[in-house]
Image (cartoon, rainbow, N blue to C red; front, top):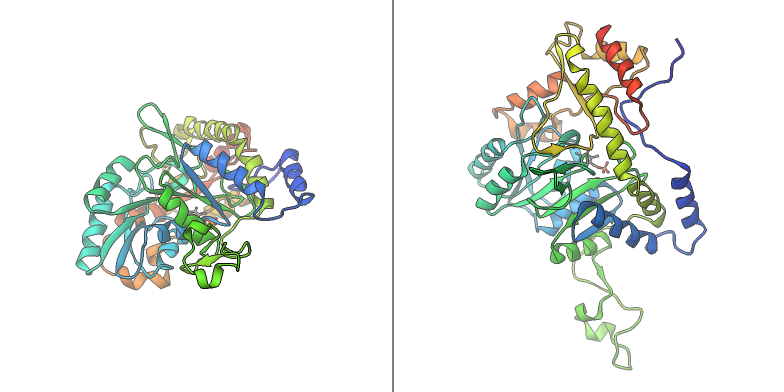
Length: 399
Ligand SMILES: *Cc1c(COP(=O)(O)O)cnc(C)c1O
């Protein structure tokens, strides 16, 4: 049978994306040029936020956000275990200790109860819980109102990991959009090709605080400022004329090079302009899956849908019974692959990674383990057709 292969996810690149990149290649700036500002303006607009700071990965975005809130040693960062490594690692970079939170086994999302439990564990360990990083798995938002209430009570910051959730709308009338920071201080995005918007590699942080925006910009670019009103070292920086040197810059703390190039940003802008179309397409595909859920064999269902949220889905997560229909996950993945269908596991619980696992001995992660033992991500991406989903579902039926 020669049928096209359907991966679990892939980017969607058109001629206009290619032309946008070529235009930059022929221009004067390959980096720190106008395409960067254009992307940031567009993203702030799309996320209904005051500031969008672009960088070169979602991991960098999370690290920049952690730095902006002043996370450091003796602090604890609360991160759900069901996520990509980077959500936890970016907090670890600052010297803070990660305290993992459990999740709802039907959605993979952290709830306020899981947060409360993790806060207690952090305090018992003598740590100050300073931030929570809710992860909007597959594009569905955590209950941010409830989570933010707990965080505010505890004097904690909230950094949303919205790497899966660009384009998701939420609220009683779906009047809010992921990244607007209604219930958070900062929101991190990834624009890795497998996510909804592709930049090759790329990420961004959105915020409504000018203070955070300034810190994010400094940290992204070596800690360098070129604004005379911020300079302090006259002996080094002032010219004989008494004016600050036109060549002069200052650094008050070391930053990183987390800049995204104009090449990446041109692709990002071209893609962002199609976000509404991408989101409509992904929503349609997700609906198609749910419309066929009842026809799936016993022992397979789809992850629960959360209320007051219309996700622009990055992943389509199915939940199998624990022994994968008596066959095991490898066998199921292999069988689907033979039918031309790619699947993946999102995620191996981060608290069980060798680096982190010694810290979590004896803690109840029953939701996380149940989710991990049953999850399998089915194909969903913009250029897929509803007909492809029928192919996936019929292959599931043949298991
Ligand atoms: C992809 C992803 C990241 C990291 O983004 P990169 O752009 O790959 O660095 C972080 N958190 C989550 C939930 C992700 O899916």
